[in-house]
Length: 345
Ligand code: PHE
Image 1 (spheres, rainbow, N blue to C red):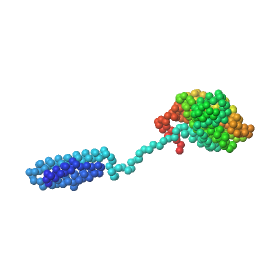
Image 2: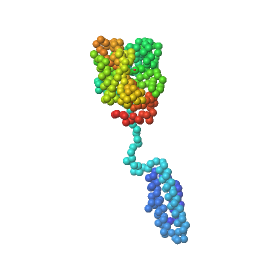
Image 3: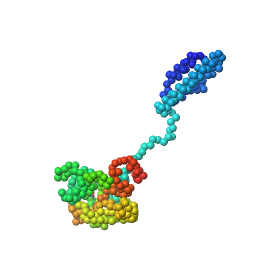
Image 4: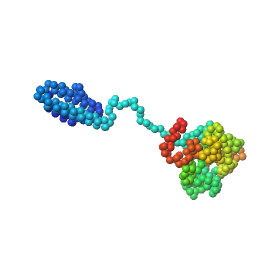
């Protein structure tokens, strides 16, 4: 054992480079392990002549401390720069969370309504959101300049035209297309997005969703309409639900009615959701006006029918008591996650 050995090891330690924790461990074994080079020098120390023991002992201890410090330093650096290789990784650890999205409350309500009417034998029909004046108004018995057009403030896509393009204000346009193309009898529901030029507030929005329905056959009566709506209301809101009809007006139905369901929150006692009345308005309906049937080439002497339409956000509001329409369109994840458990797969 001599001074050169110590100096060589000291220089090697200073120049030592390790990328991984595995390499650090190998270096530790090489220098400080049971059979390591520094450990070997301690063995040799026993044979050093007594007059040199003091000085050698000190340098040797310094070397050992230096080696330990250097190994610690390399270990810390390797830990920082990444996980160790090999079995140091815990393969049984749970994987990264991959959050699944949830269905939008409007989609959940639409699916429920569609499922109910499918059971009653209705088909689902869809149509364009950009429609022409004819399918949204003209064929539905809204003559040009008829004041009833003001009931639905329209976004026009092209103006000044005989049959301008516009964003549909209701999905009744899809019913017109069904009457034009489908074979009788017709039983369809038309879910879809509709647009009205309304100022956005808690109670109104320029976009919302509807499901409208149409049934045309021989001998269809108002009693059939009432029965269909009652069955729907009981499937949707519970078996003890009552309905009531109030006279109303729509250009495309005669007679027309507005339908209320008994408030399933206070069960008729009166609460702030039903504004103390015990009833909640859910849809508009009526017997298809003969003019509407004739406009689509259906013989109104032989056939009759009923139609109804409801807003999905309104139904969702009643179901979940979220009373600000804007929540349905802002895509705030905190709001959307509320419906995770409501999602039916
Ligand atoms: N189309 C009407 C609306 O959007 C709803 C409705 C449909 C009323 C069918 C009666 C019959 O307000």
